[in-house]
Length: 455
Ligand code: SF4
Image (cartoon, rainbow, N blue to C red; front, side, top):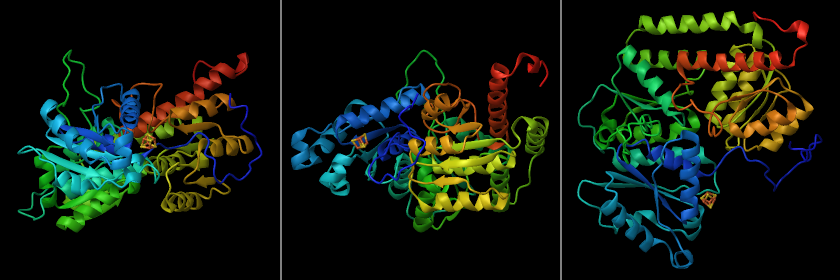
């Protein structure tokens, strides 16, 4: 497996091998699915739209709806205006969404289609909405696409004027699983905090099987809720890369104070989230959460000998990797190779600060990296475990190290869209996965005289 990856590292400036990211529109599509009754629309050739729908379907194992402007060669020369206008008319007539959320592809971006002008010139049915975001694929990653569409939700749908304070917190959960969004909502409800979460893909991409297909499932933030976002007390944006831009947009537009925290993955990031909630609302911590935290600490103590001092490589989307690195350090693991495919200096800065604080030296940290970088680092400085998405399985097999699947995409396991990784409950689940992976490997490989019943 991956025999052609050399141990010796030579500098690459133009070649990317096994990218640790994908392109912007898929993230915009995912964010758009978090609006109730929304049909994402891809303005470009249809191949992009099919790929993005397929990739999301493989990850969530649920139907993913989206339409496309379906460019042909003519549109490439003369622009895609008539494709989009006709496409929007058709979509409202046949599929009847409440909202269409248009993203662009590299093709329409290169042509330079002016979405504002095209949509202004399109007849949109009464009571329906079209929002749009430019999502050029040659900049950033799917995380930037998610961020751009989340920001567009605010730019296009939030009421300009504050009407009356609604006493709610605006919550931007970041590029996380629907199960993670549900878990954050459960915590908010336990504390007794009214909120509006956007985008919210829970019960959209992890729907129950009732035997009946619903094109627009029950979940998602409604347009009325989005309009009300400007009346919120404050915004809590989870993950700088995926959520901060929308929070700043809401602050600029409606004077709702923006607070950015980490994705609440791991004990410290969850503590920080809850403390932020308490600070903003004056509420106190409920007994149930204290119990959950205590149970998490109990598990950490019970099985710390399974992972203490083990070296790990962590890769994936920046907000998830930052939080996971912090959690790994809390567990006594030693992150030695940390990488994201998404560009951004903030990633390396934040990770390096954490490592320095923990006294971990000589770790490799890189933004805009690829999985060949990661594999070569591991060949030179072996690790005991890899934490990241499904694409890590090739390195895991080549180097005989266990892979704990976390992040996007997970194409070869199920459960991630139904069980959280965030909050205290999610942290317990991650510990269980890490511990089980180490022990399973030990059981398969140890000498017979070391094969233990009780571990
Ligand atoms: S990189 Fe461009 S052409 Fe390829 S899927 Fe993404 S938007 Fe489409």
